Length: 214
Image: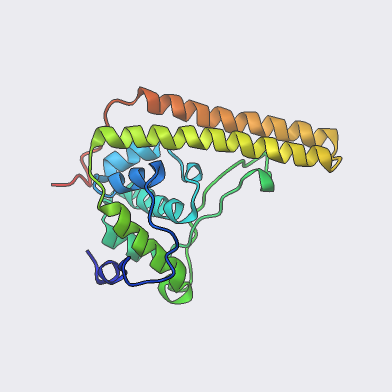
């Protein structure tokens, strides 16, 4: 574990908010930290960063999956190094509709070291990685957590789109714009639904040999 991670303890700070509460997102990321790059890529094929709701877990997931895409195992030390130059990606939800792009996640490079320019955000990530790294490891469990994350993503996205549609109706938006919203909504929900089905069909993680842990 790096010095940054070791010193960013969760016991010596008064600004951490409520006691850490585990949920499917945290369990998923905790499991991925103990897996090979190939296994992470298998999960990343069905779970996208936009399926992760909370900002810090989403950023951690972006870093993990991008390292895995380059063939690197998600070692926490490499993650905090990558975080210094890669800011959290932009995520589009129904409050910023783009029917041609839909929801997406980017992986922008920061010209400044985030440990210096955004120390609170960077330190929160380090603390978060400490918390989730201590979870147990099980290839079968990670599939279960992926399914739970996708199910929550589907339900949350459905709620967001319908709330946005209601706002447009109340604001007397053009019928064409409301119709375009529903087309984008169906496309978005269909994408998540298909990935939910793919996760349900998963029984093992077909990790590639490169980047495998010893």
